[in-house]
Image (tube, rainbow, N blue to C red; front, side, top):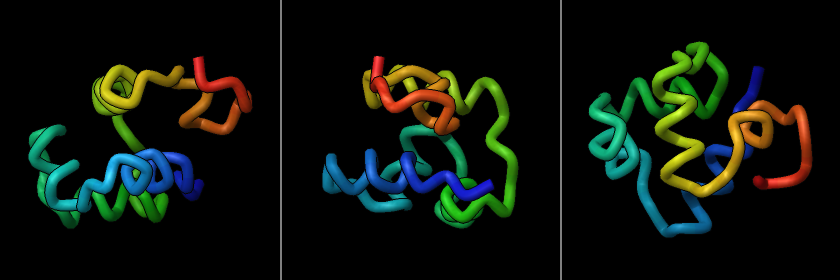
Length: 68
C-alpha cells in the first residue's frame, strides 16, 4: 500500500523526511519506507501522524476523502 497522503501532508508543511522521522522518533529511512509502502505503518505511528497533521487515520489510509 502506497501512503501518498502522508507524503502530501508532509510536503504541505515543507518538512523533509528526516524532519518527520525526528518528529516520529524514527530514522529518515524508516519514514521513507512508510511513504513508499514498503513498511506497514504501526498503529501508534498512524495515530501520531493523524494528530500531527490534524487529519483522521481513515484519511491517511484512503478510506475517506474527508480530512477530519
